[in-house]
Length: 385
Image (cartoon, rainbow, N blue to C red):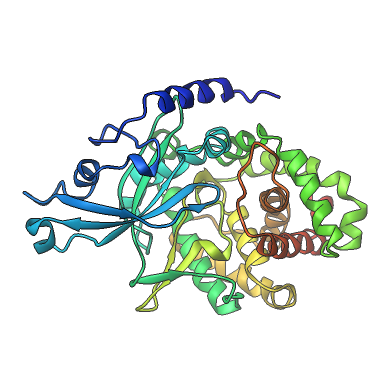
């Protein structure tokens, strides 16, 4: 199967490889991290400091996943040193062909670059600062240069299991994010750089998503991590996933983060909670972020005990931020429908197809998939439409 943009991307990738040269100006997008130059880094980092320049840099080890990631260590001339410019930056890009094929079709490149160009300056909570964000709409090479949080904070890892208190912090931030979009008088016109949720998910469907989801559910079941009742009705999951797009499209829109699992959150040394990885930001309803955050972020028994209180808390925070009030009953129905696409994100991650890069460690992917599958079963999702 040839993807809609595949030939275009492959041809552009081949041209880039044949004409590879170091990036020099802000108009350049490095074709690989080896093609990053001191001149390019100076243009990105030093523009606001007269006389400052990067005089040397060093690449850290590759960090491959959905994006091609790399930390870059920087040395400056005297003007740069005196200005206290950062000793390192963290970069996310799509120099790899498989990364481009997936993120071009899913809209991930458009989302994250769009966030840092059009939304970041409006945010009133902690997010990583971007020095530069750009992409090529033909070949879908991209680069985002972010502040390096090392020494200032740390992203969550497997040592953070999730708790009701942490979830309340997360939900408070997600409510503020949604409300920021809901308060925009011309959301769709002014933020057309961001896709709607339906556009974002349907783009991912081009990359054989249904096959990856079926395979990932099978692998999770083989590990004994899918409820029997849901497994018996597994043929209904994908139709319900597609149906959820129409259900979400009929609801009021704001901003949604779209990928709120624990490892996209971080804690600063002063205790502030932050949210990173904006590759799934979209114009859409709050239901998916709410259901995804509760179901993926908490152990099943803890989620079952606290979910109604957490939903009520979110409703109040969301209304305070500018959203419309709903009842607990309506909120539960909305998240039951919306969580299907969160399960799709993770069954896909358990067993990605050839067009997809490896995205998450297998043990973490299985755990999150199991939590989401159990939430679908608990919430009666397959009967919620």
